[in-house]
Length: 143
Image (cartoon, rainbow, N blue to C red; front, top):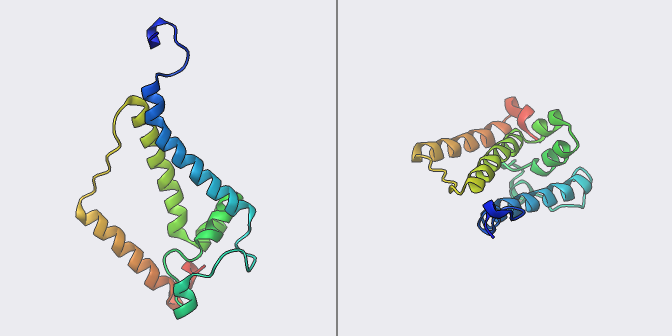
């Protein structure tokens, strides 16, 4: 029986197309649930960033777990304070995921084709963020 002849639920092809975005969402949700439950602000729960441990400098990811913990608990101010790039990434991920899900539902592939200038710009932004958060005048960006 096809979808027009009274079959309940979406066709198998649609379920197959939705499996990957839904699997990614389940994985991200589980990771955020864990970080929301196990507080990274308490020592001993997570390893220290190797770059921070060796050099004393914050990498672009430093504060990301504290940011995720605050984000899960609805404290956007603390999330941005811990890591503004990571918090922005949460919203960007959500937007791309919704687009991905809609396109998968419609049977269209998700293609994110960014010109090299965009990738270089993202790299430059991460580099500037990393340098500034390690300088005295950029201490507001430090976790």
